[in-house]
Image 1 (cartoon, rainbow, N blue to C red):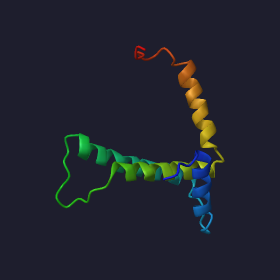
Image 2 (cartoon, one colour):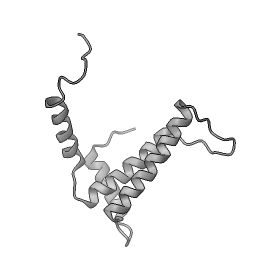
Image 3 (cartoon, rainbow, N blue to C red):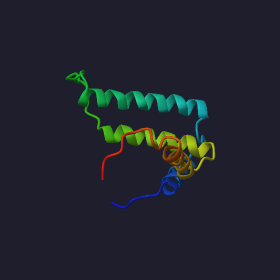
Length: 109
């Protein structure tokens, strides 16, 4: 399996969405979708690691699939707002490596 950069993922999602006249949903609608997908991910994590087992009638969904759904919607939101997610990631990592550099207990070498 080949690995894709975030730029490639954003381009792949854009090529998919661009096939349709409707295009991207509004940012507010995508936030609602992201929230829905987060709920589905939370439900799967709770079933596998929490105190709430699945009902006999519920189908099994992988945590991986739910994360993929969230990533897809997040990429759609970023694309619609012209946000480069690699740059967004770099901004966050810089913040963690400066402001939060002494926040956590480091593993000894």
